[in-house]
Image (cartoon, rainbow, N blue to C red; front, top):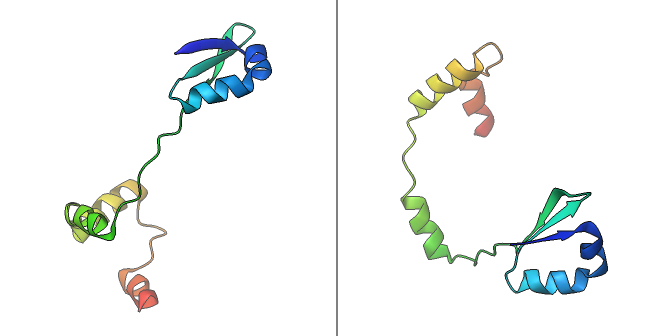
Length: 91
């Protein structure tokens, strides 16, 4: 990782961006203090529908009763919509 000044970044932005595109990372300083990091964006490839379905199958099952209890403990229950109201609005 290279450390460059704000002025260097401004004056050589095209070269810096080319280096970033090639995989390099820069820390940018202003008045000797690091203020930014310029690095390549991690690109994710698009997944196929089959990969997404398989990934979904591997997710853990959710126990609604336990999830509701934990939510009530964390958020309290004063403003909670009753179960019948919530389910009725989804029908």
